[in-house]
Amino acid sequence: MLPISFLSDFGLVDEFVGVVHGVIARIAPEARVIDVGHDFPRGDVQSSALALMRAIQYLPEGVALAVVDPGVGTERRAIAARTPWGFFVGPDNGLLAPAVAIVGGADLIVSIEDPRYRLPAEGETFHGRDVFGPAAAVLASGEASIEDLGPTVDPGSVTPLMIPLVEPDGMGGMLGEVLWIDHFGNAQTNVSPADLASLGLSSGDEVAMVIAGIERRISWTGAYGDVEPGEGLLHVDSYGQIAVAVRDGRADEAYPLTVRTAITFRQPGSSSIPVTPFTLDGL
Image 1 (cartoon, rainbow, N blue to C red):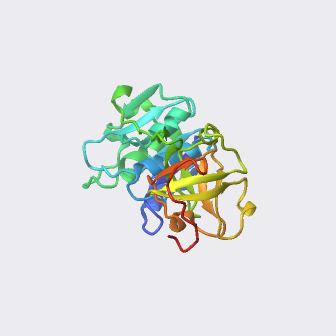
Image 2: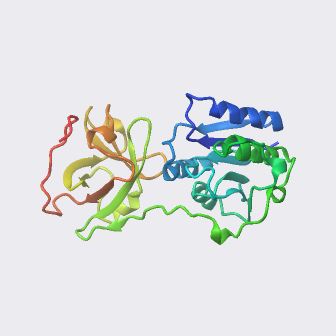
Image 3: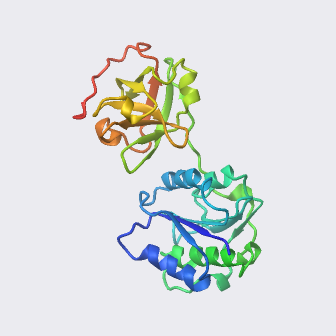
C-alpha cells in the first residue's frame, strides 16, 4: 500500500479536503494520506507547482495527488504519470511538471478516462473527488495499474510550467522574481546564491535591492537574528534560494512584495537610482 501525498488549494473552511480523504478511504482504507498543504492561493498553478516541487524530495515514495485546477470542467486533461519516485495524479495544467522533472521525469503518462475509476457525478466542478482522488487511491492500493486508467499521452503534448529565469539587468545587476510568499511573509526569489556571487557579493555583504524602481540597501545574512528587530535581510532559505525577510515583521507587507514581483540585486553604488531608507512603515 503506497502513501498518498495530497496538495490542493481547497482550503480548510469547506468540506472539500475531508471529502477527498473520504473517497480515498472508501477505496483504499489502509492508505496513509499526508496533507502537504491546502491553503495555497486559489487557482495559482505556479505557486502550488513550486510548493509540490519543494516538498517532493522530502515525501515518501508513493502517489502525489495535486489538485489546483482553475480549468476544471474544460477540455484540459486529467493525467497520471509514472516516475522513478512513484505516481503523480492531477490536472494537465503544469501543476505536476516541476516535481515530475525533479524526480527524474516520467516514463509513462496517461489520460484518466476509464469510467471504472471515476465517480459518477452530474457536475464537472469537483474532479478532486470524482477523478483524481479515485485514481490516486487505486494506484496506491494496486487495484489498478496506471495503464488501466486510460490511454497513453504523448509527453510532448503535456502542459509544461515555465519557471522564470534570472537575467542580467543591463546595469550590472541580476533581475529576478518573487516565486513564493510563505506564511511568515518571507519572499522566496528565483535568484540563487550563485547568482549573487557572480556579482561579487557574498554572505555578510550589503546588497542593493531594487523593487519597482526604488533601491534599498539590505544585508545578506545567515539568520534572522543577525539584524535588528524590524530590519530587512536577505538569506538563503531552506530550499537554497535567496529570500527577502524582515526580522519580527513581514517582507511582503514592508517592501511590499507579491508573487511575481520583479526584483533586482546589485552591488551597492553600481547604479544612479536614489537609495530609499527602509522602515517598517513602508515608503
